[in-house]
Amino acid sequence: MKLNAKILSLSLIPVILLGVSMFLVAADRIANGIYDEAYLGMHATTLAVRDIFEIGYEGAYRLDEKGDLWKGEELNISQSIDIVDHIKENTGLDVTIFWNDTRVLTSITDENGNRQVGTKASEEVAQSVLAEGNSYQNRHVEILGKEYVVYYAPFYQDGTEDVAGMIFLGTPQDSVSQIINRVRLQLFVMILLGVLLSVVIVYCMVNRIVLLLDKNMELLGVMSDGNLDIAVEGNILKRKDEIGELGRSIESLKHKLGQIIHGIRSKSDDVFGESDVLKGTTEAVYQVMREVDSAVHNIAGSCNNQTEEAVQTSHNVSAMGEMIGHNGAEMAKMNDISSGIMKLSEEALIHFDKLNKMMVNVREAIRFLSEQTSLTSDSVLKISSATEIITAIASQTNLLSLNAVLRQQGQVSTEMGLLLWRQKFRSFPDSLILQRRKKILPVWKRFWQILKKFMGTLRIFLARQRG
Image 1 (cartoon, helix red, strand yellow):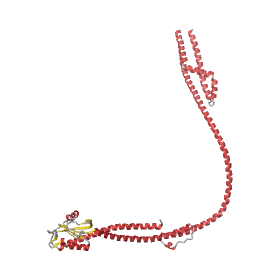
Image 2 (cartoon, helix red, strand yellow):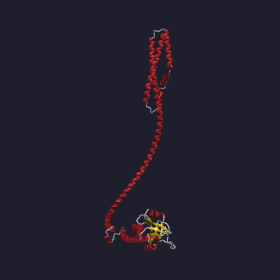
Image 3 (cartoon, one colour):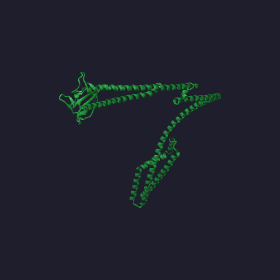
Image 4 (tube, helix red, strand yellow):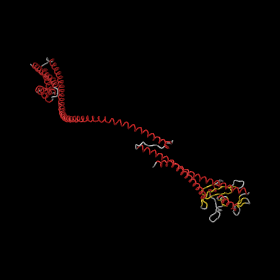
């Protein structure tokens, strides 16, 4: 959508909406006003008819034996046809006189010209007018198949507030609707003319604004193509609104762009002079880059050789890792064997401690035997028997069994054991092995010497006692 169409739409849509709203509201107000005026006219006519009866003639309202309604003795209301016809001819309103709720005089006739007398009013009308004494009005009351706008008002007996009957005035709904529609049409035409006039005025203003904007846009398009030889129209520059401001901005932009282009040309000349110097510099840089490229190729060759050596080194390291893993397994086995040896050594020391305690007991026994040398030969025999029992008990203990094992290992194959240890546990310190050996063997030899000496002494003692 073009700019002028957009501006025109934005300007006219509110005007059209306002016109439609005004028509709808005004049409309803006009209809209500016409109905109100109709009721007001009917009310005035009702009062006039009632005044004719009450002021012009004295007496009470009564109904004679023929069914005619009289006012006093002079006015036969049922026969006053000229009055109701005259009112209808001059006002267009039908008039009906009711005695209570029964029509006794009316200007309403059917298709054959018969007046509708003797008929009854509706219960709603009778309740509102006769019973409550109020007036009644309605826009849609059907009489002889036609809708009427009606108005009912009560009239009273002279000097009292007793309702004697009703006065009816009405007009066909079609006649009122014609008046309303005619006024609505006039209002619609006036609003339509106002909208059309607004359209023309807005279109002229918008078209002029858009035309000036198009000229400014055309100047900007020429400037965007690189042509600064333009001139903004004087009538645009003289305007005080945004369009004039836009024209002045375009003129200022033209001058500033000219200055910028002039500066660019000056700088381009300087750049052109320095381009020769830059050319020589780039050639020198190119030569240096060629030398650098050659050096990079040499370095790349050296790197390839180093890479091959690194690969070989990696293979060697992998082999060393496998050997270390194998040695680790051997070391684990050696650690298990050494743990067993240390455990046996600790057990031997425990047995030696027990043996020492037993020797203390034996020493106490010998001392006791020495004190009893004065005993009889029977006592000597008992001591000999006790000694044999002690010897038998010692031969049965695990200590003597362990003693025999340790003695066999210590005397028979001591040096060969050390040699075997050195072959299987080369990484195990020799000083620790010799330390264990030196600690066990002297103890064992000392124990064995003491035991031999004790047994010899015991045998001599027993021989003396027997001799």
